[in-house]
Image (cartoon, rainbow, N blue to C red; front, side):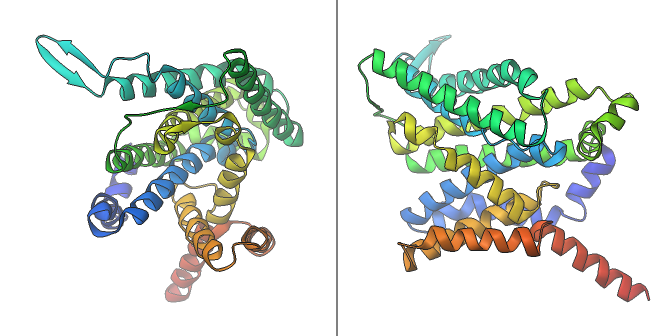
Length: 327
Protein backbone atom coordinates (compact mmCIF):
# COMPACT_ATOMS: atom_id res chain seq x y z
CA UNK A 1 0.00 0.00 0.00
CA UNK A 2 2.86 2.37 0.83
CA UNK A 3 4.43 1.73 -2.57
CA UNK A 4 1.16 2.47 -4.33
CA UNK A 5 0.64 5.68 -2.37
CA UNK A 6 4.18 6.83 -3.18
CA UNK A 7 3.58 6.20 -6.87
CA UNK A 8 0.19 7.90 -6.82
CA UNK A 9 1.35 11.04 -4.98
CA UNK A 10 4.95 10.98 -6.24
CA UNK A 11 5.43 10.52 -9.94
CA UNK A 12 1.81 11.18 -10.88
CA UNK A 13 0.93 13.50 -8.00
CA UNK A 14 1.33 16.75 -9.89
CA UNK A 15 -0.80 15.59 -12.81
CA UNK A 16 -3.47 14.30 -10.42
CA UNK A 17 -3.60 17.60 -8.54
CA UNK A 18 -3.85 19.58 -11.79
CA UNK A 19 -6.74 17.40 -13.00
CA UNK A 20 -8.56 17.66 -9.66
CA UNK A 21 -8.13 21.43 -9.66
CA UNK A 22 -9.45 21.61 -13.23
CA UNK A 23 -12.52 19.57 -12.30
CA UNK A 24 -13.20 21.73 -9.24
CA UNK A 25 -12.77 25.03 -11.09
CA UNK A 26 -14.49 23.99 -14.33
CA UNK A 27 -17.99 25.32 -13.44
CA UNK A 28 -16.54 28.74 -12.59
CA UNK A 29 -14.65 29.00 -15.89
CA UNK A 30 -17.17 27.87 -18.50
CA UNK A 31 -20.76 28.32 -19.65
CA UNK A 32 -23.74 26.32 -18.39
CA UNK A 33 -23.62 24.20 -21.56
CA UNK A 34 -20.04 23.14 -20.83
CA UNK A 35 -20.95 22.44 -17.21
CA UNK A 36 -23.55 20.01 -18.55
CA UNK A 37 -20.92 18.51 -20.83
CA UNK A 38 -18.66 18.17 -17.79
CA UNK A 39 -21.38 16.19 -15.99
CA UNK A 40 -21.57 13.77 -18.93
CA UNK A 41 -17.78 13.48 -19.06
CA UNK A 42 -17.57 12.65 -15.35
CA UNK A 43 -20.47 10.24 -15.69
CA UNK A 44 -18.62 8.28 -18.37
CA UNK A 45 -15.44 8.28 -16.29
CA UNK A 46 -17.36 6.73 -13.38
CA UNK A 47 -19.04 4.16 -15.65
CA UNK A 48 -15.89 3.14 -17.53
CA UNK A 49 -13.58 2.96 -14.51
CA UNK A 50 -16.15 0.75 -12.76
CA UNK A 51 -16.50 -1.46 -15.83
CA UNK A 52 -12.77 -2.22 -16.05
CA UNK A 53 -12.72 -3.52 -12.45
CA UNK A 54 -14.50 -6.59 -13.79
CA UNK A 55 -14.12 -6.69 -17.55
CA UNK A 56 -10.75 -5.02 -18.06
CA UNK A 57 -9.01 -7.11 -15.42
CA UNK A 58 -10.72 -10.50 -15.73
CA UNK A 59 -11.49 -10.51 -19.45
CA UNK A 60 -15.19 -11.16 -18.74
CA UNK A 61 -16.70 -8.53 -21.04
CA UNK A 62 -19.99 -7.38 -19.57
CA UNK A 63 -22.44 -6.06 -22.15
CA UNK A 64 -25.13 -5.51 -19.53
CA UNK A 65 -23.59 -3.06 -17.07
CA UNK A 66 -26.35 -0.60 -17.94
CA UNK A 67 -28.66 -2.75 -15.81
CA UNK A 68 -27.10 -1.36 -12.62
CA UNK A 69 -27.44 2.22 -13.82
CA UNK A 70 -31.01 1.58 -14.89
CA UNK A 71 -31.90 -0.01 -11.57
CA UNK A 72 -30.40 2.95 -9.70
CA UNK A 73 -32.34 5.37 -11.87
CA UNK A 74 -35.58 3.49 -11.35
CA UNK A 75 -35.20 3.39 -7.58
CA UNK A 76 -34.38 7.10 -7.49
CA UNK A 77 -37.54 7.84 -9.47
CA UNK A 78 -39.73 5.45 -7.46
CA UNK A 79 -38.52 6.71 -4.08
CA UNK A 80 -38.25 10.40 -4.99
CA UNK A 81 -41.54 11.41 -3.38
CA UNK A 82 -41.33 8.80 -0.62
CA UNK A 83 -38.37 10.21 1.29
CA UNK A 84 -38.75 13.51 3.14
CA UNK A 85 -36.57 16.37 1.95
CA UNK A 86 -35.52 17.24 5.51
CA UNK A 87 -35.37 15.42 8.82
CA UNK A 88 -34.84 16.73 12.33
CA UNK A 89 -31.96 15.31 14.36
CA UNK A 90 -31.22 16.65 17.85
CA UNK A 91 -33.17 19.79 17.11
CA UNK A 92 -31.30 20.43 13.83
CA UNK A 93 -32.90 20.23 10.39
CA UNK A 94 -30.82 18.13 8.00
CA UNK A 95 -31.55 18.73 4.30
CA UNK A 96 -30.87 16.69 1.17
CA UNK A 97 -32.22 13.49 2.74
CA UNK A 98 -34.18 12.58 -0.36
CA UNK A 99 -31.12 12.57 -2.61
CA UNK A 100 -28.70 10.88 -0.24
CA UNK A 101 -31.13 8.19 0.90
CA UNK A 102 -32.04 7.32 -2.68
CA UNK A 103 -28.36 7.17 -3.64
CA UNK A 104 -27.60 4.75 -0.80
CA UNK A 105 -30.56 2.54 -1.72
CA UNK A 106 -29.47 2.56 -5.38
CA UNK A 107 -25.92 1.53 -4.44
CA UNK A 108 -27.17 -1.28 -2.17
CA UNK A 109 -29.66 -2.54 -4.76
CA UNK A 110 -26.99 -2.61 -7.49
CA UNK A 111 -24.67 -4.60 -5.22
CA UNK A 112 -27.44 -7.08 -4.33
CA UNK A 113 -28.41 -7.53 -7.99
CA UNK A 114 -24.78 -8.15 -8.94
CA UNK A 115 -24.46 -10.67 -6.11
CA UNK A 116 -27.63 -12.51 -7.16
CA UNK A 117 -26.97 -12.67 -10.92
CA UNK A 118 -23.18 -12.72 -10.71
CA UNK A 119 -22.75 -16.32 -9.60
CA UNK A 120 -24.78 -17.94 -12.42
CA UNK A 121 -23.52 -15.47 -15.06
CA UNK A 122 -19.85 -15.90 -14.16
CA UNK A 123 -20.09 -19.66 -14.60
CA UNK A 124 -19.89 -19.17 -18.38
CA UNK A 125 -17.09 -17.53 -20.37
CA UNK A 126 -16.39 -15.70 -23.58
CA UNK A 127 -19.31 -14.81 -25.87
CA UNK A 128 -21.73 -16.72 -23.64
CA UNK A 129 -21.03 -14.32 -20.78
CA UNK A 130 -21.50 -11.33 -23.13
CA UNK A 131 -24.87 -12.65 -24.31
CA UNK A 132 -25.97 -13.58 -20.80
CA UNK A 133 -25.21 -10.16 -19.31
CA UNK A 134 -27.02 -8.49 -22.20
CA UNK A 135 -29.99 -10.78 -21.59
CA UNK A 136 -30.07 -9.95 -17.87
CA UNK A 137 -30.12 -6.23 -18.67
CA UNK A 138 -32.99 -6.68 -21.12
CA UNK A 139 -34.88 -8.88 -18.64
CA UNK A 140 -34.66 -6.29 -15.86
CA UNK A 141 -35.63 -3.54 -18.31
CA UNK A 142 -38.83 -5.28 -19.36
CA UNK A 143 -39.64 -6.21 -15.76
CA UNK A 144 -39.47 -2.51 -14.89
CA UNK A 145 -41.59 -1.63 -17.95
CA UNK A 146 -44.24 -4.16 -16.91
CA UNK A 147 -44.23 -2.86 -13.33
CA UNK A 148 -44.70 0.67 -14.58
CA UNK A 149 -47.48 -0.47 -16.93
CA UNK A 150 -49.19 -2.21 -14.02
CA UNK A 151 -49.02 1.05 -12.08
CA UNK A 152 -50.45 2.91 -15.12
CA UNK A 153 -47.27 4.93 -15.53
CA UNK A 154 -45.34 5.52 -18.75
CA UNK A 155 -42.72 7.69 -17.06
CA UNK A 156 -42.05 9.61 -13.89
CA UNK A 157 -41.54 13.35 -13.64
CA UNK A 158 -39.13 14.38 -10.89
CA UNK A 159 -39.30 17.94 -9.64
CA UNK A 160 -37.22 19.72 -7.05
CA UNK A 161 -33.94 17.97 -7.73
CA UNK A 162 -30.45 19.39 -7.06
CA UNK A 163 -29.17 22.18 -9.29
CA UNK A 164 -26.68 21.60 -12.10
CA UNK A 165 -23.63 22.56 -10.03
CA UNK A 166 -24.53 20.21 -7.17
CA UNK A 167 -25.00 17.37 -9.64
CA UNK A 168 -21.66 18.23 -11.23
CA UNK A 169 -19.75 17.91 -7.96
CA UNK A 170 -21.62 14.77 -6.93
CA UNK A 171 -20.77 13.20 -10.28
CA UNK A 172 -17.18 14.36 -9.87
CA UNK A 173 -16.98 12.62 -6.49
CA UNK A 174 -18.28 9.40 -8.04
CA UNK A 175 -15.80 9.65 -10.92
CA UNK A 176 -12.94 10.08 -8.44
CA UNK A 177 -14.20 7.17 -6.33
CA UNK A 178 -14.40 4.94 -9.42
CA UNK A 179 -10.89 5.92 -10.52
CA UNK A 180 -9.40 5.23 -7.08
CA UNK A 181 -11.25 1.91 -6.90
CA UNK A 182 -9.85 0.78 -10.26
CA UNK A 183 -6.39 2.14 -9.44
CA UNK A 184 -5.98 0.41 -6.09
CA UNK A 185 -7.62 -2.84 -7.24
CA UNK A 186 -5.26 -3.03 -10.22
CA UNK A 187 -2.22 -2.68 -7.93
CA UNK A 188 -3.39 -5.03 -5.21
CA UNK A 189 -2.97 -8.76 -4.75
CA UNK A 190 -6.65 -9.03 -5.59
CA UNK A 191 -5.99 -7.29 -8.93
CA UNK A 192 -3.09 -9.64 -9.67
CA UNK A 193 -5.47 -12.53 -9.08
CA UNK A 194 -7.99 -11.03 -11.49
CA UNK A 195 -5.30 -10.69 -14.18
CA UNK A 196 -4.29 -14.30 -13.61
CA UNK A 197 -7.91 -15.29 -14.21
CA UNK A 198 -7.86 -13.31 -17.45
CA UNK A 199 -4.71 -15.01 -18.70
CA UNK A 200 -5.68 -18.59 -17.80
CA UNK A 201 -8.54 -19.22 -15.43
CA UNK A 202 -7.88 -22.95 -15.03
CA UNK A 203 -4.22 -22.37 -14.24
CA UNK A 204 -5.15 -19.64 -11.75
CA UNK A 205 -7.48 -22.01 -9.94
CA UNK A 206 -4.80 -24.68 -9.89
CA UNK A 207 -2.41 -22.18 -8.26
CA UNK A 208 -4.87 -21.72 -5.39
CA UNK A 209 -6.54 -18.46 -6.43
CA UNK A 210 -10.21 -18.45 -5.26
CA UNK A 211 -11.48 -17.81 -8.78
CA UNK A 212 -15.21 -17.80 -8.05
CA UNK A 213 -14.90 -15.47 -5.06
CA UNK A 214 -12.58 -13.10 -6.91
CA UNK A 215 -14.84 -12.86 -9.95
CA UNK A 216 -17.96 -12.33 -7.87
CA UNK A 217 -16.26 -9.69 -5.72
CA UNK A 218 -15.10 -7.82 -8.83
CA UNK A 219 -18.62 -8.03 -10.28
CA UNK A 220 -20.17 -6.54 -7.13
CA UNK A 221 -17.54 -3.80 -6.85
CA UNK A 222 -18.03 -2.85 -10.49
CA UNK A 223 -21.81 -2.52 -10.00
CA UNK A 224 -22.08 -0.20 -7.00
CA UNK A 225 -20.92 3.10 -8.52
CA UNK A 226 -22.95 2.69 -11.78
CA UNK A 227 -26.04 2.24 -9.61
CA UNK A 228 -25.48 5.63 -7.98
CA UNK A 229 -24.48 7.28 -11.26
CA UNK A 230 -27.71 6.07 -12.87
CA UNK A 231 -29.68 7.59 -10.01
CA UNK A 232 -27.98 10.98 -10.48
CA UNK A 233 -28.43 10.81 -14.24
CA UNK A 234 -32.20 10.58 -13.77
CA UNK A 235 -32.07 13.67 -11.57
CA UNK A 236 -30.11 15.48 -14.28
CA UNK A 237 -32.92 15.00 -16.79
CA UNK A 238 -35.75 15.33 -14.25
CA UNK A 239 -37.61 12.48 -15.94
CA UNK A 240 -37.48 8.68 -15.76
CA UNK A 241 -38.18 6.61 -18.84
CA UNK A 242 -37.18 2.90 -18.79
CA UNK A 243 -36.15 2.64 -22.44
CA UNK A 244 -33.76 5.53 -21.95
CA UNK A 245 -32.07 4.54 -18.71
CA UNK A 246 -31.75 0.87 -19.75
CA UNK A 247 -30.48 1.74 -23.23
CA UNK A 248 -27.89 -0.90 -24.37
CA UNK A 249 -25.88 1.92 -25.97
CA UNK A 250 -24.75 2.89 -22.46
CA UNK A 251 -22.97 -0.46 -22.05
CA UNK A 252 -21.59 -0.24 -25.59
CA UNK A 253 -20.22 3.24 -24.93
CA UNK A 254 -18.46 2.05 -21.76
CA UNK A 255 -16.78 -0.72 -23.75
CA UNK A 256 -15.76 1.62 -26.58
CA UNK A 257 -14.22 4.14 -24.18
CA UNK A 258 -12.36 1.41 -22.30
CA UNK A 259 -10.98 -0.09 -25.52
CA UNK A 260 -9.92 3.27 -26.92
CA UNK A 261 -8.21 4.29 -23.70
CA UNK A 262 -6.79 0.93 -22.68
CA UNK A 263 -8.82 -1.20 -20.29
CA UNK A 264 -6.06 -2.75 -18.19
CA UNK A 265 -5.08 0.35 -16.20
CA UNK A 266 -7.17 2.92 -14.36
CA UNK A 267 -5.48 5.75 -16.28
CA UNK A 268 -6.37 4.32 -19.67
CA UNK A 269 -10.15 4.91 -19.60
CA UNK A 270 -9.57 8.60 -18.78
CA UNK A 271 -8.01 9.04 -22.21
CA UNK A 272 -10.76 7.01 -23.86
CA UNK A 273 -13.54 8.98 -22.17
CA UNK A 274 -12.09 12.38 -23.03
CA UNK A 275 -11.21 11.37 -26.59
CA UNK A 276 -14.56 9.79 -27.47
CA UNK A 277 -16.66 12.41 -25.66
CA UNK A 278 -14.95 15.36 -27.31
CA UNK A 279 -14.86 13.63 -30.71
CA UNK A 280 -18.58 12.75 -30.48
CA UNK A 281 -19.44 16.34 -29.56
CA UNK A 282 -17.46 17.73 -32.51
CA UNK A 283 -18.77 15.18 -35.03
CA UNK A 284 -22.34 15.61 -33.82
CA UNK A 285 -22.07 19.38 -34.37
CA UNK A 286 -20.41 19.07 -37.79
CA UNK A 287 -21.98 15.89 -39.20
CA UNK A 288 -25.23 15.23 -37.30
CA UNK A 289 -26.57 12.70 -39.80
CA UNK A 290 -23.52 10.43 -40.06
CA UNK A 291 -21.57 11.06 -36.88
CA UNK A 292 -22.34 7.61 -35.45
CA UNK A 293 -20.95 6.01 -38.61
CA UNK A 294 -17.78 8.04 -38.19
CA UNK A 295 -17.51 7.01 -34.55
CA UNK A 296 -17.81 3.38 -35.64
CA UNK A 297 -14.97 3.83 -38.13
CA UNK A 298 -12.81 5.36 -35.40
CA UNK A 299 -13.51 2.38 -33.13
CA UNK A 300 -12.59 -0.09 -35.88
CA UNK A 301 -9.35 1.83 -36.43
CA UNK A 302 -8.50 1.55 -32.74
CA UNK A 303 -9.28 -2.17 -32.56
CA UNK A 304 -7.13 -2.94 -35.60
CA UNK A 305 -4.35 -0.38 -35.19
CA UNK A 306 -4.09 0.16 -31.43
CA UNK A 307 -5.65 -2.77 -29.55
CA UNK A 308 -3.88 -1.69 -26.35
CA UNK A 309 -5.53 1.77 -26.53
CA UNK A 310 -4.18 5.27 -26.12
CA UNK A 311 -2.61 4.59 -22.73
CA UNK A 312 -0.93 1.44 -24.04
CA UNK A 313 0.63 3.45 -26.87
CA UNK A 314 1.83 6.10 -24.42
CA UNK A 315 3.45 3.42 -22.24
CA UNK A 316 5.14 1.82 -25.25
CA UNK A 317 6.45 5.16 -26.50
CA UNK A 318 7.78 5.99 -23.02
CA UNK A 319 9.58 2.65 -22.78
CA UNK A 320 11.11 3.02 -26.24
CA UNK A 321 12.32 6.49 -25.38
CA UNK A 322 13.80 5.28 -22.07
CA UNK A 323 15.53 2.40 -23.87
CA UNK A 324 16.94 4.78 -26.48
CA UNK A 325 18.28 7.10 -23.78
CA UNK A 326 19.84 4.14 -21.96
CA UNK A 327 21.58 3.01 -25.14
